[in-house]
Structure formats: structure tokens, C-alpha cells
Amino acid sequence: MARVDVVMPQMGESIAEGTLSKWLKKVGDAVQRDEPMFEISTDKVDAEIPAPSAGVVAEIKVDQGQTVPVQTVVAVIETEAGATAAVPAAPAVAPAAPAPARPVPVPPAAAPAGRVDAAPAAPPAPRAAAPGAEETADERLRRRSTPLVRRIAAEQGVDLAAVPGTGHAGRVTRKDIEGYLQTGHAEGPRGAPAPAPPAPAPAAPSGAAAQWEAVPWPGDRVEAMSRIRQLTAEHMVFSRRTSAHVTTFYEVDMTRVAALRAGSRKLYEERGVKLTYLGFIVKAVADQLRRHPVLNAAVQRAAIVYRGQVNIGIAVALDWGLIVPVIRGADELSLFGIAKAMADLADRARTKRLKPEEVQNGTFTITNPGVFGSFAGTPIINQPQVAILGVGAVEKRPRVMTLEGAEVIVPRMMTMLSISYDHRIVDGADADRFMADLKAELEAFPENGV
Image 1 (cartoon, rainbow, N blue to C red):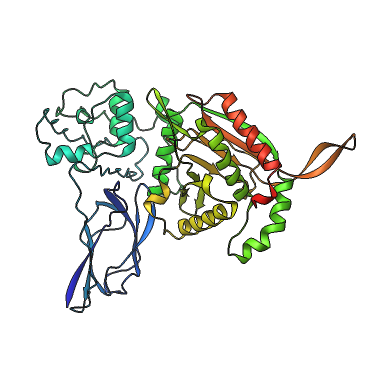
Image 2: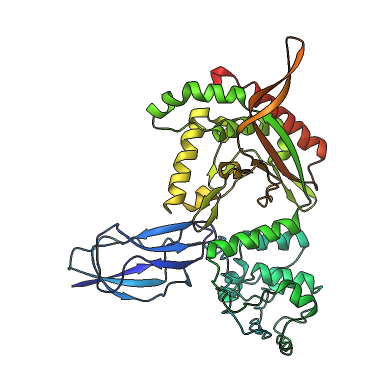
């Protein structure tokens, strides 16, 4: 018999740890090579991980919900000698290559009313390397924080070596750097002990605490957030705090699009692709982002980064949360290419088969609450982008039109589009010009574009 280690895979070079969210096999179960063995969650994607070899699960070393660094042995498969599949060695990583890890916020168990659990003291921050000196392994690990943390540090002019880190191997988490900034960099000298925890709260929360802290009541059900829900919550709060959100609305007549869709649906279905209203909207948005580059941009401190690529993220609602796979080079795709990419990404998002790079590097996001019947919405910007489009339900509504010189009320296929934009760099005129051109393209969508 031979024993094969099953490890936490590295799902992309910027991923340094993952959460084992669910075991699909248990000790004693037979497993085939490439059969899904467990599910993981990272800060980019959820995925099923296949077994590297056929055999029997002999040992499980990591519990569900536990977060471990990549290449950690999570299980052992016992297999016949010689039947082991070749397991590639972990790729060597150059010392200076960024491999950020995003810490997993673990929700505490529900505490009795009035009890406040003090957070553990942060470990001392390692000494910053002297100029010209060789960087130690600990210092290198600390510097490999998440791209988000590094961006906040760059925007605020903060040296990460000065921030006490509570993440894996002393890495600086977003909570660490935000706390550092909020307290005016007043943590004291590096390596100083953490301040004493606050005294326990009174028997019941009162004042400001009572306004935001939920206390379970008899009969309530308390359930820990999933990792993807935690990450979504963090990202949304961070976005509201970062960008100056403004939302504007445009009503769009989709009657022409509806006619073109009806005439081409069968042909698309014969080619294995479903033609939806959203496909037309994505195509029109991709065209307009080239004409309005400030909507396809990002903020870097006192500079504007105009993206050279048009990569459109499409929000996909899953039973366990929300994920935004990205259509890369959307402006270079035909309507058929966009419809095919949308269907493929959505299907693999729902079956946890997305690759990490397929949810990265978006430059603009579209969310479609209209599929659930929503009239309109005010979506939150997907950082570090500067705009997001919300799509309302496409349905028949009465509209006043002038026909043969007379004003009449006629039924038309209508939708409400909303765009939330970052007023730091996008002016109202910029957003309105983009939306006016988007509306015009959809209402006169070219027949040869289908």
C-alpha cells in the first residue's frame, strides 16, 4: 500500500491560503482519481478540489471551516503501490513575488446578552529590514498582504512594516490597517504590548452599542456567516466608505431589442447559446465604455487609471452568496460571443468550477436584479472600479408616443437602468452622457449586430 498526501491547492499566485468549507468524502470512503473530494473557499472563488489519486480516504487532517495555508496536507489517501498518480510539486515562488493572503474573519459564537469578548492581542510586528539589508522570511511574509491592504497602505502613505498584523504569519489584514488609520497611528512603538481589553459591558447593551449590536432573543436562530458572505459584507462596507456614491436612472425602450431577440433566439439555441436581454445590454455597455473611458477607470491616490481593457463583471446570485465572474475583452466580442461567455461563466459559477483568474481584473460590473422582478436598484460599486450598472425588469409598460402627429399611449417593452458611480472622478455629466449613449444604442440596436 502507498499513502498519498492531499494538499490545499494554490488557486492562483495571489492566493496564499484557503478555507476548507466542506468535505465531500469521509474516512473510509473510496475515491477515484479526479473525483471531487472537498470544497474550498478563497477570497476569489469557491471550488471543488479533485482527488490526486484513486484509493481510500485514510485520514482527514483539516476540519470543515478551517483556514490553512496553501500546500498544507489536508488528508491522506491510501492506495495500491504503483497506482498513485503523479502529484506535481508546489511551484517555487521567488522571494519577491507577491503572494497575499486574506485572513478569514471568524464570527464568534453567540454570546449571552451583555457579554463582550475581547479580541486577542495582536502579535508584535516584525522589524522592518534596514536599507540594503537582506529581508528575513518573517518580514517577507508580512509584506505579502492582500492587494487591497497594499493599496490602502499606498493610498494613505503607510509602511506596512509599521502596522501590527493579526493575520497568518503576522500578515497585516484590512482590519489591522483600518484600525491603525482610525486611531491616528497611535498604537505606540512596534512590538509594544496591546492595550488592555475594555472592561465587560453592563448586563444589557445600551447607548451607541445597542444601536448596532444585535442580541439574540429567545427563539432566534444564530448562524455563522459563510466565508463568501463575510467577504461580500466586508467588500460592500469598504466600497461605501471609499467611493462617493451617486446613482442616476434612465428608462430605456427595449422594444427593438425584444423584436431582434425573438427573431434570433431559435438560431442561437441551435448553436447551444441562450440569447437574453442582458446579452444585448452587455454588448452595448462594452461599446460605450470605449467611448467613455472615465467609466472604465480606477482611482490611484491623486491619479486616474484609465484601463486599457474592457473586462465586464456579471454578478451571479448563488444559493450561498454572490460572485462576479468577468468577461475579458468584452468590447472585442460579438453579441454571440458575449452570450456564450455569460452562459459558460454563470454555469461554472453555480457548479463551483470557476478559476480564480475568472473573477479578477474586472473594469466595470453589471448586476441584474430585474431577473427577480425588481423595477430598479442602487447597486454598490465593486472596488476598485468606479461604476456599476443595475438592470431592472424588462416588461411591458404604457408609454406615451407620437404617431402620425397624435399622442397615443401604447404598450412597449421597457426597462429601468441605474448606474452608481464614484463622484470622486466621475461627474454627473460624464455618467449622463454614458447613459444617454447606452440608451440610444439599445433603442436603435443594429440588426447586423445580432
